[in-house]
Length: 336
Image 1 (cartoon, rainbow, N blue to C red):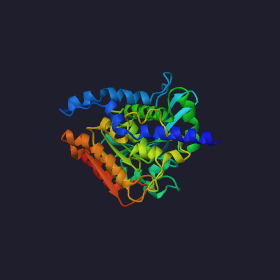
Image 2 (spheres, rainbow, N blue to C red):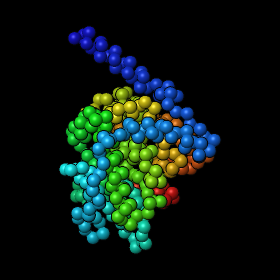
Image 3 (cartoon, rainbow, N blue to C red):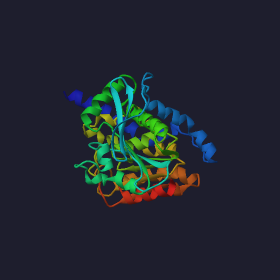
Image 4 (tube, helix red, strand yellow):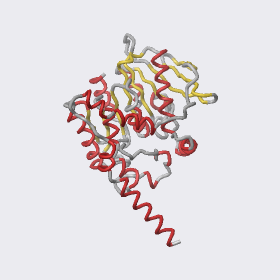
């Protein structure tokens, strides 16, 4: 048994050393050019393709249905699209409250673990304070809101993740495909402006925003709440200042190839030059602001070198694991 413990510790130490050598992984995979926006875009093209491969889905994973409105309560609609026989993906859609002329600017809001589209829209009696009935606020500010339903429990996510891994995919790849298919159908059938689309995600939804934006050029701006982190430390370094995924049941969080050149700031470099707001709560146990600041400065560097530093902001607010409505709405109104 002692030999086994020593062997296990040796493997863990060696892997952690590699995972934390972020400078080396970045040097291996990135050769960014900051001479112009055009040269920058060209210099990250291969990395965008690599990220697409990380989030791949089986070749047969193609939606075979059109958008269906299956419930309506006043202006609010519940919609769904058939991805495959037996698999329906659903979302809530709400137009702006104010009497505006379509097409409307759209915010795709992605909920977190334990969350739901109903919570986003403020239609659930159990809506936690962390969501602040954000869908209602966005609609009152003149935005249409699309809130997809995502797998929201560790057990179900872990189970689907395991099955997807056998097909060189992941629960993340499957659900990002669903988000993009829903967006396809909403643009085709509902009165939204294809040039004014943003993604805002909270917690796990923040991960979906960070992972989707590099691939979805139709989304012109983003807000990431309660997710952005120093990813290597968050994944494998136990620390009293924050929770570490290696010591939790969140198996789904371990996305194959995530740290082969794809730290959070690296992924932001695939979102650049589009506007991006990152929100971190001082009292949020998932992160430690000094580490988040280090990662944000790395992300900000890409915008600074391109002369567009005003397009990326870090909102370090006084709250906990929650969204900050005021800074998010202000940011989206400025850039959309």
